[in-house]
Length: 456
Image (tube, rainbow, N blue to C red; front, side, top):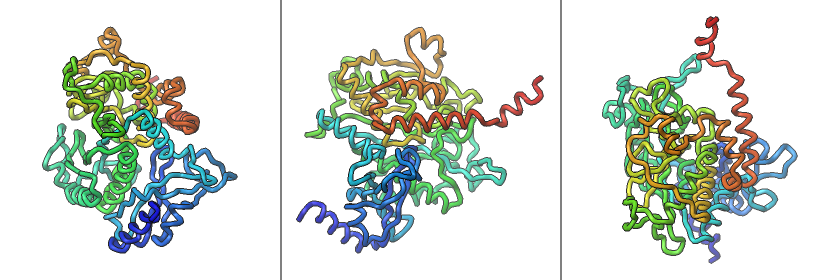
């Protein structure tokens, strides 16, 4: 039997055993927000061969207008995901097509393009992402408060606190139970460094699978939070005096044929257990870090998380946990690139608000450029970088990540490697993000009123 016919037959059997009556054919816009078309399960073949059609001009960043031909979301059969919170419904991630061709403005199609380039070089990009998020409620005046059913989550250092997590336990159990049924390898949950902030960790996978999973994780967390009277927000910095939310990226390159971790080397003279190939990859990431930042921290709000040293308003826990210097080091959370063990890198700067398809495409391109050019990241940095001032770091030749969205966009626009990693999406990305900054910058905030209204 032809492969697709065998897959269709197998899935139709699963629909019967899982009681699936409807399918969500899901894709993302340029921001990474999930979009769906709901179709009956009986329409699976059409959703695969033709796709669920829609007007691309109605979605951000698709490169289409009201005159454009239909865009079709074609289900990827390997992404079958029953919705534990909505019995009878399953989700499929999809690729976007126009006129029967993959649409280059589709973030998922674009990531597959970059991954195919890496595979042709002999590499597979394995990534795990740790999504942090807040549970909040919206107040009648439009402001937000933390969701705290027991009114006990008020410690200055609430990380791992039992009382803090206990109020959210019904939500966290429901979320863990739903994810356990998907065989993602969920291995821990915790209350994070900020009040009302949580994290659930699942095992790494190939980059496309991880991007698909992070997208669905946001969907399911949002739906389950609503059922418990809360909003799950992946906004990078919803509270000025609390730690922001990251999606720390853990990664390595593997051999495309054998699956061997190509970043590991027990004979590393630097003593970090990393290979020469790994250091070249890191050299590329560090070299392109200012431009990468636009994609891994893509909103105005993200740059209220990426601050040098302690938060200007005084983080309640005492730390931001977000490195802003462009560095790598050992098992040290003050570094941008942390190496907790041989063959394993963590980037702590990636925002929970990123589009994972775009972020991972840009990231891989930067690392591969380092390999191709033989870039050297220098010697690892040691010690507490939070205690280092700008002058001291500048004297050591260490630069900071952009401190605002327009700064990051300037670097992005000037970096052909990172721009090319997004293909034609790069132009749309720049246009929309410049507009986002202009709209934000035109607002008059409460802080300004308080500071300047009677200043003269």
